[in-house]
Amino acid sequence: MLGFSHQLSTVPIKELYKTYSDFIDEARNRTFYGTESTDGRTNFASAQIFSDSIILVSNKVDDVFNVNNFIGAIHFILEIGFKKNFPLRGAISIGNFILDKERDIFLSKCFPKIVKYESKQEWTGCVILEDAKDLIIESIFGKVALKEGVQIQG
Image: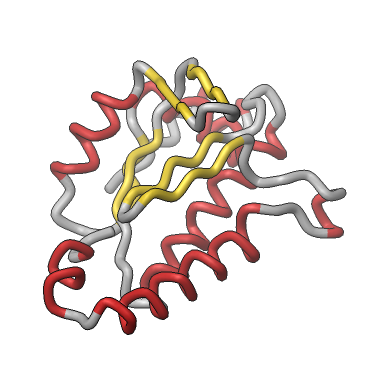
């Protein structure tokens, strides 16, 4: 969340808590879970929020439905962030991870790369890293788009 540290030091904590908790509740209720139109599937295999950081993990990426829901839900979270005055920036990568729900531990070798690119952004939004680009293009536009060289430009 861009400017979150500044808000912590300038906005009364109870006021910030109210705004922040409204954001968290809306993000969780409107994007984390499936709807009747998604046959009850969730948009994320894992979703963790800690302070000003959000870690979202897609369901299996071999299913176009999962990838498209993941991208759509991220778009919606960015929109909610704007509405609640919590502009977000992030990065999307692809790779393996370990999730230990009992200990609340999430580890991935993608973290250093994601943090590097996320912190370079001087704008709100979400950058798609090179390793995830082809998967996302194919999921959204199909295999033909990859053959024709569709490019994501920022």
